[in-house]
Image 1 (tube, one colour):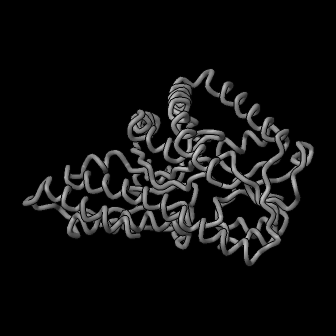
Image 2 (cartoon, rainbow, N blue to C red; image 1 turned 90 degrees about the horizontal axis):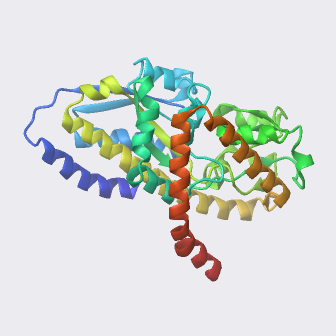
Image 3 (spheres, one colour; image 1 turned 45 degrees about the horizontal axis):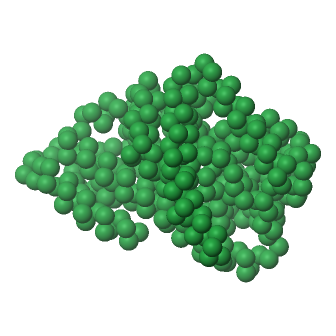
Length: 353
């Protein structure tokens, strides 16, 4: 958590300068997480944010955190914030596609932007403004809450050699990617994090995707499903801090800025922490679990996924102007920035591996 300390020091000075002598009224907020209390680094981002808010406010702004095992509604946090039962929540926007499809693209999209591209889009390419437009009808403000980078494509009990091998499989996979795979014949479900291992072990599902080595190693999926596929569906999974708009508006300017700085710092720290965790975890997994087989989906499968993805996006966007606006913005930004991504990252790696 070194970056929290470094950035926190600079942020503290900046925030205190806003209202150095102002007496602040004590503010006590509650935050609900979709995650259980031990799901690092998701929970680290939340606790890091709350800790920074407390320190930068001199104890005048305190955020208490309830994990999913306490409030008992991991996928109910959207409504909790909307109704004011909680001031904030930490979750992922693609969980709300059934409530409001316009919120879907702000976590990630299949075959979409990488994490650096997506962060650039959020903060400099109009993404933040579009996200606020999507959440505004619900009385919610949304902010980036931490990125996992490119996620792995999932753990499978059996090897996938063709499209036929996918048909009939039961798989846990959230977001738009689930709809893509459903078009290819899979039965798709979304299961709360705490139930994933048991579901895979008991055969309730045949495959699942979670995140990457850093988070997957603790879940034990490799003990049940040895085929570990590379990603396509979540190239830049950004979590969200959701904030009740009315409660945010009641904050002083100083506390608003404290909260913004803390959320942005904690989000970036989660990105680099998760990257570190995955590198560390894969070194362990490769040594201790040689039965794990890293696979890439066959070209036939990838082509079918891309086609299904394009068809679904086209259908959804027809009568949903805001969704189309967001998707068009993401596509245009990706096309522009991808040239630089290829020049700076891809060609460097290609020539040095």
